[in-house]
Amino acid sequence: MSYLTDLKRAVGTGSARQGTMRHWSMTKSSVGLLILTPLFVFTFGPMLGEPHDTVTAYFARPFPAIIAALMIVTSFMHFKNGIQMVIEDYMHGTAREYTIIATTCLSYVAAAAGLFALARLAL
Image 1: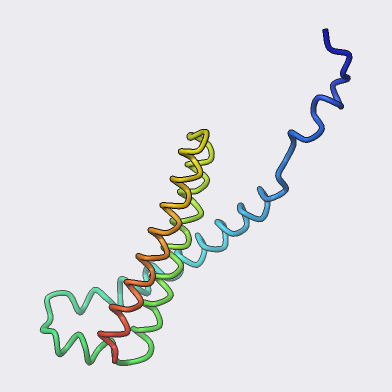
Image 2 (image 1 turned 60 degrees about the vertical axis):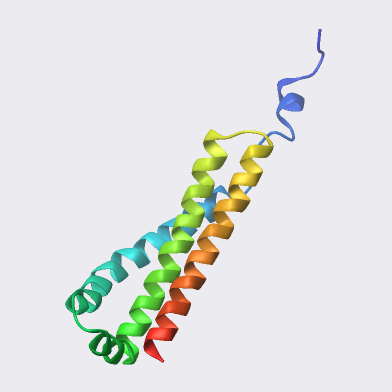
């Protein structure tokens, strides 16, 4: 039989105080993607099927390169935060921690690879 009050049982098991920050982070990146996605489609779309030298000359200009870089970074960071929330909700134990580390590394590596490819294409 436990003589603990309801308040004493609840202390230490409450909020981690990061929910609001994560929510705003995801909201801001969603709005950013809402703006960037049409810009990316309209800058990237005309280059589909074009020869390599035409694409290289196109992405050497600042506007298409900046839009592509912002799209890459924003989308992979949005993916990182979103998949981390899903993993925290549905996985438990050490597998959860390893999966969070793996998906975080995957998103950073993919963003770096995309930026490297864009830099090689633009320069």
